Length: 221
Length: 221
DNA sequence: CGTGATCTTGAGGGAATTCAATGTCGGTGG
DNA sequence: CCACCGACATTGAATTCCCTCAAGATCACG
Image (cartoon, rainbow over all chains, first blue to last red; front, side, top):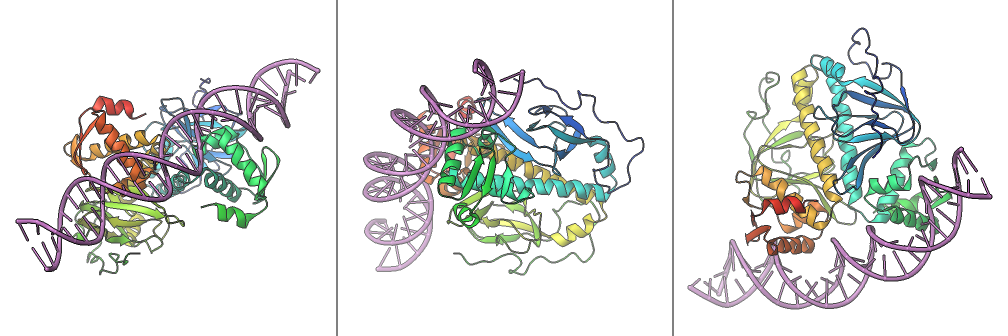
């Protein structure tokens, strides 16, 4: 069990002195907070006080099942927003996967503004809808074979990277395994096999090069 | 391949002569349309013109993977709303699992109203959030063993039934298998095993009685 | 250079699938 | 009425894919 150390407990965000104008993006509110690798941002079951935006680094959200297994629900990379909740408590935990800078916005502020500002609700709705799409895609991923899951994961990652075919994995094999519902051994073996058929190249364990897109697309179900 | 026969093609809903007052529920708009067993309500990729509410019967939404496998995303029972979409096209197909009566509401109407009515956006946001919760639960279900999935499914169904421990399955073994990411054989075997340990009773293949809740809860991970 | 964390590789086992056959049920027409 | 039919469900045997357990290999870091 790791020390719980949420942003709230770290002192939280300063509230803006004046309410912000409607339909403004979250970007300019407050300064990002720094989180170190594996540091907890919030824990499952805690009051959902903030909405977060990744400015740098990366975040994983996950559930811990009662048999100890961990299911990662999503990875959030720079630009992504996380912490959306239906209820007043977080249904997942969130941790930084690398040293990260993360912006927090008080949920009460947003919700208060949403109460009479259509644009704000629309914004939240938009975020929720995107999250829903992501989740549905995740379900489809979990039905496939190990190889298809890994390939699908790599292709999904690639769309978030600047250089679409050559990038560093920000997460461990364990993270990937917990996201895909596999074991680290299976993830490792699958990557090795993908390299052996020249679909990808692994200069180092975290450095992936997709060298044969068509082959990957073909393997992706 | 089955004949495509969406509601739109069946003539669609009459538009209300006057826009409805804000924050009104969807219930009173128009009359429900009847669908027969296995009839398509809309198809993946079609323009998302309507939002639907089940008045009677049941609906499945699903994706067809390119290798022919089918993943059922959700079952909707009376009172449930489906057809929520991020984009302007449906990302899933929907079919009636039994003879059903289904209410349709034009999406453009809702969205137009949402443009300046907070309550309407809030309502859509609420529905989307619920859907997101459901989807997240579905992911957790897919990580478990076959037995845990089946038990989880039964317990989930039970919460939607009037008589919580004695109900008819509205869907086939194939539907259940496609929802749980299993085969029909595994579903069948698992149900048989659950009966053999007296956790459930199966007077007929569609009639389930949960006779030992504590045992089921224990088996549910 | 040593240490721990992470990753890879191998061997064996188990859970779910695949393939195949049989059983059950509801409807339909003789 | 009942025999037949097709759809749906169950059961068994063999196989496959992934997991578990175990041993090394590699890497980062003090």
